[in-house]
Picture (cartoon, rainbow over the protein chains, first blue to last red):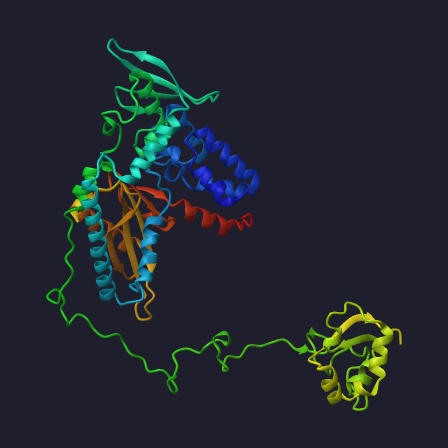
Length: 386
Length: 111
């Protein structure tokens, strides 16, 4: 199992029982130390989703058993997370600061860059507000997509009446197929018991199913905004972003006496002409890259001509008498074929190789180049019986 | 930016990053807020010499003083900021928890 998937699953568990199951799976897979760190050292109310629900008494009772400490918030501090689980929002801003070079500047310069970026983003939001004001509907595009997905899901659910008042149905039980999960939708209080409604504060598929069951009314029904948080509404977004303004600091705010030039330190030696040494891949000859030894005759790394044992095993050096190509290879156990003539030949007879090697033309290297137009010698791993 | 404070979902993210200037080795504090468009907006930005309890509490008290209301929402922080003595509903970042568990227990199963 992937660690990230396992921990995210633990974090997003929507009940105490589910948390316990996911925690035991981590213990089996990654050991008790990891389990103790995740479930006991880090308080579950601080990072697990189910601790942010309105839990029942049974759920709350289970928490101190795992934690085992007298924490003032052991029962949790329930709050909707709106689908957020990490600090990605702030880290994205930090990466943007690197992109804008504001993190590699002195404080005042970086503040200036950040404020300019803020102002440009505010202009974008103001344009978005203008676009939204011309569109129909109560919600913005992003929320509309979520709601349309929930409407599609609602068609798979079945409903039963739980409680009724004199005039209308008050509570509805929503189930899906053979699943044991049951959700209670309170139409008077405009609430659902599912985790989606609690965390996102948007109308869930159970509310849509219950509404369709009771009133025989399909989407869009009139009071949809009553089931959702007011922050999702188009009007609240427009009112909060249409009239924002940022004042950039001008020279009046700057007291030049307070800003000093950075301290200068003279470095030793003559200054470089170039800012940076180019690497070998960029075409520099100055860059030193250590390459391993390579002997082109046997096409092997790690040794050169003098230390080659493949050509003549047992010999570390080659004498001047045997230094010509023909004689050297005649004394070896390895057969040779060369030139373009043998390029397409898969196998060469040992006798033909031997005849070529023993011929005078092969011993004269210049003549060999002219006649066979030889570019390189290729060794065969085929042994010649000498 | 008082209007922005009223808008947006009550979810905050805080993170600190180090400066890359050779002459200044400070920290950049960023506080962002989630919008209904599923994007984040930067609410507050500050530069401080170090990331310790004193400067973090200075940053958050400055935010509160300028009109920010943390009581109604949650704030995602890394585990370093858990020593803050402010009345904020702190939630720990799940990605930081994963990183720490990978580092401390040397879990190599990433397949």
